[in-house]
Image (tube, rainbow, N blue to C red):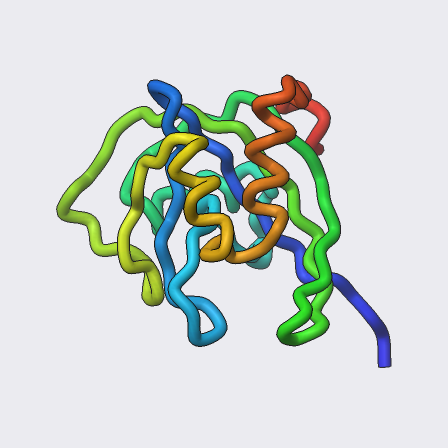
Length: 145
C-alpha cells in the first residue's frame, strides 16, 4: 500500500480585524475552520482556494499571498493532510448562494472571539495559521507554482 497525503488548500481572509471562518459539521462535531477543501483533478492550488472559499462562504475572493504550507495528521482518522494556506481579500458576496453541504454558516470573528472558541476549532492548525499571519508570516503568491 502506498502512502500519500491528502492535498488541501485553505484561505485566511481578514477584514476590519475579523477573520472569515466557516462553522461546519465535521466528524460528528460543529467546528470552526478557515474556508478549506481538497484539490480537484486538473485544478491549480490557487484555483482550488478560490473555489473552496466561494463554495463554503459565498464570498468571491482574490488571493494576495501565502501564509504557509503545513502537514497535519488528524487523530480521528490518521489521515495526513498537506495544506497550503493562502491569504485572500474579499471582492463580493452573494447572500443567495447556497453553501457546501456540511457548512452551517460563514462567520466573521475577531481574534479574541476565535480564542474563546479554541475548543471548537477543527484542528490546532486553524489557530496556528492565524497566529502565524498575525506574527507577519506572509509569502508572495508566486511561491506557489
